[in-house]
Image 1 (cartoon, rainbow, N blue to C red):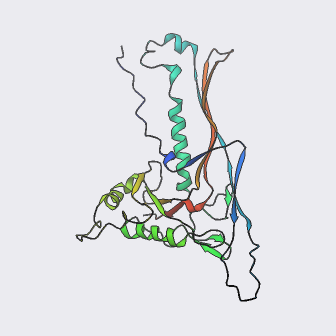
Image 2: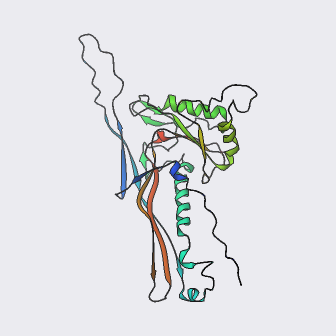
Length: 289
């Protein structure tokens, strides 16, 4: 006889909550409105009229439509009656939740995996999440490099500078934007470790301070995201919210006996959507090699 049945392994801890802010969804489609507020003040001449900025208003709509996720399996009556190993392998308690958790991780990571592809269902400002041409009144701003760069000290510092200098609101005013966390695939873990864990300047014999760790805003941590599909793309999240998980229906299970077959049907169900509603939440670099 069998002394052990093996098939279930320790699972990777949930990673998506480190990137996505969860919001409770109550509607089929949730929409965030991006507004333009006021532009710069202007000089006023003595005795002259005050300039009135009447251009405030709605600019972009970001839509989030929750999708349904399901998985089930059937157990025949005969298999239950003949199963001699119910203590080692209980057919009634197969870990559906593991399958759902991993699907949720993949769906969440695909927001970054597809960062250069425009998703018309989300809408937004009409360009991909990572773009050099995000529009605002009177110009554009960028949350990616014009030429995509591999991860190194120079490129990471430049991304942090670009976030601080280049992020503006819909009227073109500077905003408080700072780098927060480096997000990388497993392939870049050695590079990130050297950049983020070295006290002095990485890769040199100099006694220079490691500027990455002392930048205002707190770029002092990194996350290895196991579900990123590119071995070379890397991302910097910012202090600005924008990556969201719209949670419509939490994971649930159900079970019933099919009258005609005597099969026991077990299924799980969940409804949500990972998405973004402000591209200022992330800076991306997507080299292909």
